[in-house]
Length: 305
Image (cartoon, rainbow, N blue to C red; front, side, top):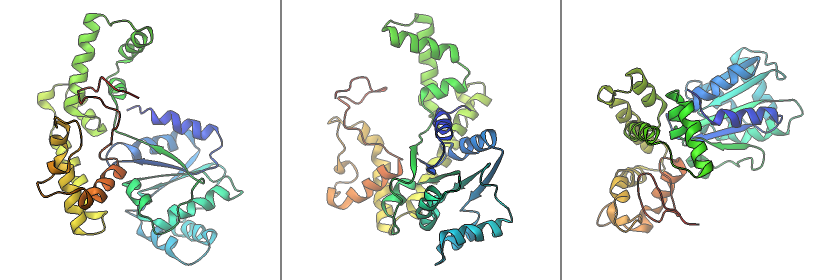
């Protein structure tokens, strides 16, 4: 499925790739898929390293040796002679190694034409809580999100409808009633399924019959998020608070005051006790803070500057 972030990756390639690029986004939004596709299509050679599966790489970068020696030992471990000129290296789940994140500075400043791309789940949380120094200014960072409605239409092969929507938007003219109803029906499907690629794929495989859609896909993704809340935290108490906030989001969205209220989490909840947990959620990109909505609607219609 086509993702708009691919165009950003092409821009990075065409501007020389001197800085390693880091893709930040929640789990299951399609980061690994689209980056692998980019690496395979755009480069002669690519190396994929998943730090969750290759813990030895993490141990190598923990060693008290130069980054050059760490890179050499990594090559020996992988049993590859890396052609730096023509090879892109993809470090997946990079949040597992603070030392490797810090080492991105080495790849940026090295005279050899390294091509490094990285991604990971909960990277936003990791970067805020790193004990090692983050290579500020040495890494290009891109945020990735679930599929938006345009990407949903792309997956449905509705290019002509996309063009029509853009044309009417640009000209500030209403859509034809028949086409507008078609767009609304697709948008209703999008609201039901969401923008997770696996969910969209399942809908298409079932010929857009929402009654045949496998709801367990969404349930499994949510459970993986809850699991992360227990894994990437300082302690169990923080995990409990993060989960409580997350589960309060539907009530928060329906709040008549149009504001986030800690009392919606529990009657005893206080800001000073939950603000760190809330920061964790926003950093994880599992939730997004909006300060420009005048009224909560689906879709958001009225905004102010």
